[in-house]
Amino acid sequence: MRARPITPTDPDTGLTRRQADVVRLITAHFREHHCWPSLREITALLGLATAHPNAAKHHLDVLQKKGVLVYDGGRRARSVRLAGLVW
Picture (tube, rainbow, N blue to C red):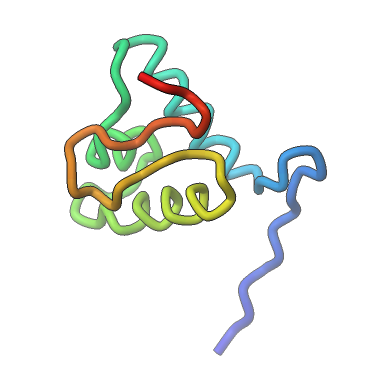
């Protein structure tokens, strides 16, 4: 089994480049559409195969553990939002 390459993290945020991209995409979607993106929309924004939304869900789970966003695991539509924001 091959080891995964270590992804450098930003010392200020503790996020990898890809995680920061996910946050930027979610924020940009909110600014443009005035609503948080669905899991399917996040999957598309990330350029992932729509048949595998678990890849996007993994990003959301990690970002939630880091305290960057709030996500209920897909139990409600458009349940992704940035932490610390009340809507």
